[in-house]
Length: 170
Image 1 (cartoon, rainbow, N blue to C red):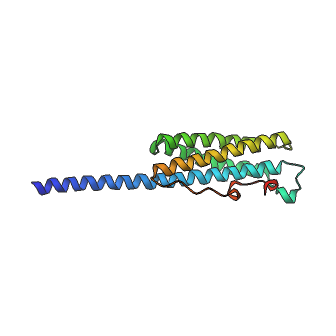
Image 2: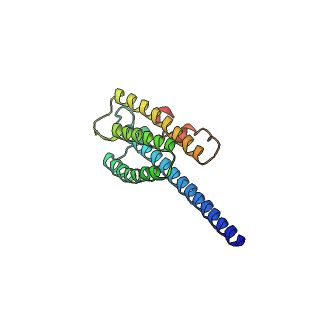
Image 3: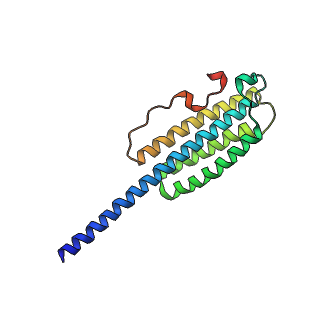
């Protein structure tokens, strides 16, 4: 009888360990992809605003087709929305709050860059840069929150080159 009880307890504990492992792996995958999509959307926004800046030479700013950037962004956004739902189901409240904040700021950045085809004014560009800094801070908060739920130490600072700096900043 005691052997059966111990066996039952062992099976229960093994199942709990397996569930924790599955949850951690699922969260890690969702966190990673969510951040990747956020960086991809930010890069598209930078490419869009730089393309709309007439006083920057095309060779320096790069030229991208704004309609193609919009299409790419829409595909990324659909996956991004799906991941937010997954995070709402699995992640801690701090992570969900950070993800939702980042999502709003990513949307604002993309909207500023891609809503209009007209030449971006200096004022528009300055607003874009302010929002991009807010976006950067939100990404860092998302990474901190995600790492905390995984029991990891704080992350190293992400170098400027990975934030999609515009040509004038490089």
